[in-house]
Image (cartoon, rainbow, N blue to C red):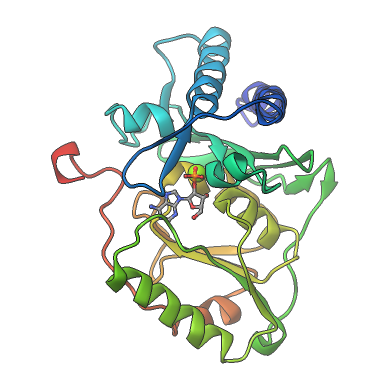
Length: 283
Ligand SMILES: Nc1ncnc2c1ncn2[C@@H]1O[C@H](CO)[C@@H](O)[C@H]1OP(=O)(O)O
Ligand SMILES: [Mg+2]
């Protein structure tokens, strides 16, 4: 059964490419913006439309009842966000919505597939750059069909680290985020970056452009596909406290190796975040 999910993997690549073309076209037209959890948490008709296209194509191909779906826009309409043992697609139709709205050219379609709660493959299409990142468990990671690998830098002083500011603007959280960034910058590292899309950030770790990406507040759909790509490129995933990575925890460090990841973890000021799979009343 080694190739059981090959058809699904190939189909996910096709669907991501088609979704990216829809996003590129929508970016040329007027974009109407709405907000979700706060005034800086943006959503557009394109996010909803592209998610419907992706889930519609997958349901048509693989049947309605057998596969489950966790999609950013469906979850924000209160559909459940629970990972079960069933084959499950985890989808962010437009990762980097703020970038999309502003014309900042990093926007990704992220599609992952998990079975028995284990990620089988991930596809990230960085649609403005037209770069297709993909990985399947045990088969390596690729960008536009070329194998990719994490960087071999072990000296933190020679690293670039990526993170994001998130959408929570409470001064206490912003203070912790900036305090962490200040400490990392002053190690010192070569640089701090942020592309505005978690999925793309993970691909930048996977292809060796940066050494690590960490964030608290991201959701499972932002990082599920990237998680497979980072692992298959030789990198690792950890919790921000150094423990095992938990896809639903909304916390993650992805690094090229443990030396770099551990050094970053030493500086991270952790703040609370409500798990993706928490009961809806708690969110
Ligand atoms: N509350 C949150 N805190 C931190 N990052 C978030 C977030 N909600 C979404 N993100 C994601 O983190 C990156 C930027 O911070 C984007 O990938 C963004 O995804 P989105 O564009 O799909 O919302
Ligand atoms: Mg996202």
